[in-house]
Image 1 (spheres, rainbow, N blue to C red):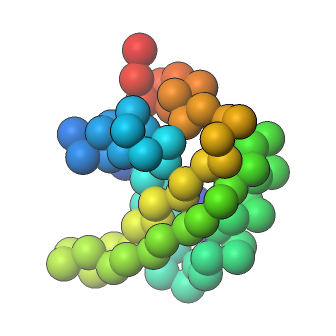
Image 2 (cartoon, helix red, strand yellow; image 1 turned 45 degrees about the horizontal axis):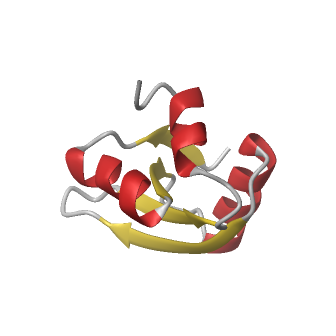
Length: 83
């Protein structure tokens, strides 16, 4: 498991609403391909792109953009990120 937890900041919630993207905290050794495969298998969605960055605190996070036919709102509701 490369995904540690979903990120629930205001900015991350905005990405769900406006960009159809989810933000996760991931392990430092995770790469884009493994993150993509894991999100697709866990949530049954199609991933268009994965952007990865390391924060100032030394933690790695991934922004996962979903295909248009899948809604990030639905996945976020399953994860109890939004009501």
